[in-house]
Image (cartoon, rainbow, N blue to C red):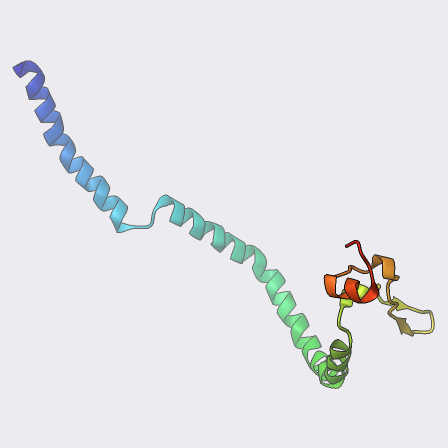
Length: 126
């Protein structure tokens, strides 16, 4: 019995300092997952830096003209948005060769029907 007990006690005594060192090492720094995530985001930032700089330059060029466009067309677009109740009732805009833009209304059979509209129009199946 002493032959089994003595090695077990020695192993337990010797392994406890090692376990304490492992616990200290884990608590002192970021985990492996945290370090991996940090490296991933750093690599992504480095890869995206040139594209973001190009986008910033483009926005600096287009910014003044875009601001002027919005100041002139903003009120008109807001008025159109108030007039149109259901945008799904219209087809995509079409630009004619002379530059006119046409937005056609979809045929009635393609328009999604809600219960209130169906009752007003006398539709029985929805």
